[in-house]
Structure formats: C-alpha cells, structure tokens
Image (tube, rainbow, N blue to C red):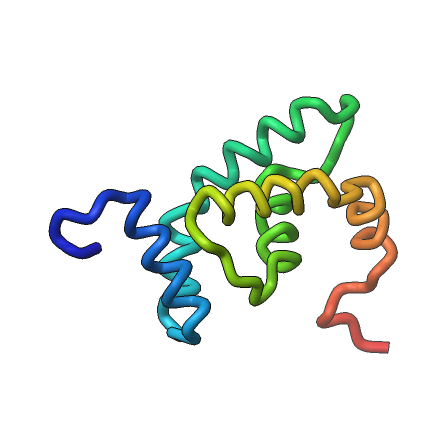
Length: 108
C-alpha cells in the first residue's frame, strides 16, 4: 500500500494492476478483500434454507472464479459485481455436482 493511500484506494489500485496484467496483484487483491467477500457471502447464505452444505468461503471462491478477468472501474463496481455473482450461483447445483464428481486422485 502506498503512503497516504486508504484501503479503498488500495483496492482500486490493485484492481487496476490486475487489469493491466500484474501477476502479483491478483493474490494481493484476494488477500485484502477476502474477509469482505466472506461477509457478503455469509449474509447471502443466511437466507438459504436450513441444512445448506455450501459454506460462505466456497461461495466466495466460486464467485471469484466467475468474475474472471473482467475489468472493474473501482472497488464499488467490483463488490457490486461480486455480490451479483454470488446471487447467481445456484448453491444446490454446485454441491450436488461436487458429490457426483470423483476426486482428482481417484484411479480407475
């Protein structure tokens, strides 16, 4: 983080670095925003039916993958897109998919 730069400004700086292809920015961004994304995910998961097996962290990771290489104008744009991605994830379908897919290390 640059001297005098707020966390919000730093997130925007990292988003710009990701867009420009900085290989280190992706990991730094995820480290910085993971807890905020997890709070959004936990709020979304609170509205799910009881017995839901998808955890907020898994929802964050799935949303992160779905956001892909999109360019974001600022942190507000990013968090709005992340929240939308989380809303669009069908958690029941994801959990049932992972129950059907054999582990990677399974030898046939």
